[in-house]
Image (cartoon, rainbow, N blue to C red):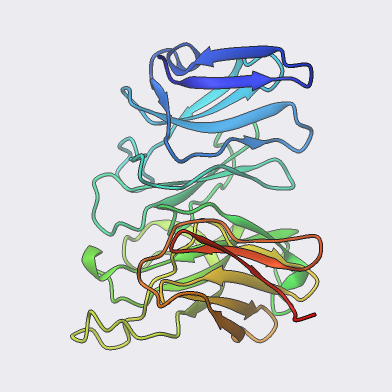
Length: 294
């Protein structure tokens, strides 16, 4: 069996391409936990590939599965090929303007925060396409900029990102979530790399009892991608403490939370909002539906 991508149309007709063929043998398999992403017009499918000489972001024609473009993913600090381990859960995110965002682990590994790389729709890197300061094990969420009333920049949309700062990677345990501006920059204090500007950040509220030696350490955010609720200007995100939180982007506070599990044994899974307003979130291999009582 050769790892690859399959397409089945509404009539049941199948088409298939192996990763070796799609990448010219730069990569040989699709990253285990990566979900493909489609361009807004449905004409291009993006996905991550590893297993060869270089980790790749690949763009295929969604109808023919022919390769349209390919980018080798590199660490913004070292220039070395990034790491795309199979136990990560990062998948591409396509922005409203066609830009593609993808999380990678740094190389060499040091902070274990990784990077959120951004590309043009054709996977070129022209222009000031700054990386985000966290990307490992996460898929970025799109936030309409009017949902953040304090934002005064010119970007039409922002990005919601997991923003953990792992003690095991030399951090202070101040594990946060963040709203980032993909078109503005700042200097990352830990690495000195020019990264996306932080618009809002907020730390988890639950102290991390496993690290009493580190004051201020809190439980990390165990999510793959959070749900953005444009009707309430809020983000809904799971924490390792077993709770689902509503992050109010107007006040930059947690205005609601609900306990799903005792915590710690959590899943790096997506959270979504249904058409009826219910929130669907997975914690410790259980799917929860959260909504108002009848």
